[in-house]
Image 1 (cartoon, rainbow, N blue to C red):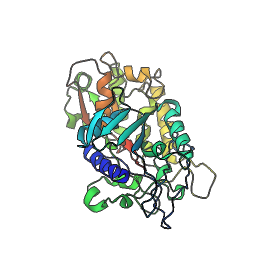
Image 2 (tube, one colour; image 1 turned 90 degrees about the horizontal axis):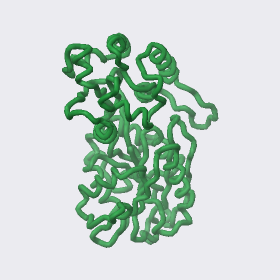
Image 3 (cartoon, rainbow, N blue to C red; image 1 turned 45 degrees about the horizontal axis):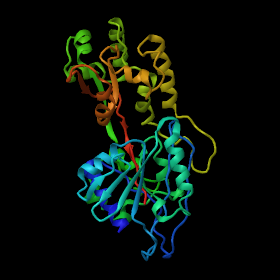
Image 4 (cartoon, rainbow, N blue to C red; image 1 turned 45 degrees about the vertical axis):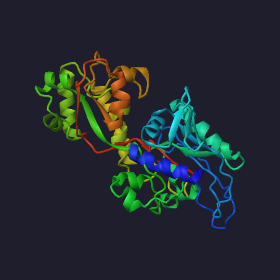
Length: 365
């Protein structure tokens, strides 16, 4: 029954956006599988997380329990599931438990992403997965694009192939973005996750600043001003002359470079970290932009108070690089001006950002 609930939750999450199903592969011998590997190395320079979950055996005799444990760093996924999953009966006042009509309980284990706390707590739980009681095992967890490959790695044996969950990749996920499929698959091309919130990237800009500096806020015309790196550097000079920063922080542009690296940081069987030339280009360009005054030197990185304040009406930052979810969940809460003040256009380089992938996020059985 628990497996059925998880499969139905996966279907509901795909309707909500996308989510990733993960877990140890079924044990063909018919005995409980207890192999688990939890990696903590951060290959992409951001918080890292991974998951392993004991699977049912082929005979279906493994203890399932009546609790589905879902690990996440905020309540977004819970709210989406509750909005679209018809089997939801009610949720506790503190939001930690969702009750289903058949008596199953979904327990939401929330830890902050900041300083790697979420991944540390998740990895600790996964290390204890084999010995944990049925109602304490990790069933589902969310992951980020930045570190999802650690969980979809076939050698790690922690992410369950989606086909083993009864998902028809052609019929159910045939219209997914190419980058979603690639990022959620192992080196053998086996898709071990899906996404509920990994989106193509946009450039989100202030209309009032565009009108003042360029004489127009039309997305097509503004798009011409930011269409590639050479052009946007010229545009940055225009913005600077009027007292505006093009972007808030050097970290804002990282994913545009990082999404296009050709080689893994550490190749299989090797122990040497290799920094892709595109990452070095980002370092060089970031220094150039900082020295030129196109970025605010006072804003260090992202997800801090200074960065959030740069999205306010008193800020002199022209644009942010966000996918669609960033507009709703990050920009909107920080904006204190009139509605309709922001518009979107194409970025200088294609990129994607978000969860699942295994997201914003990953499912493991």
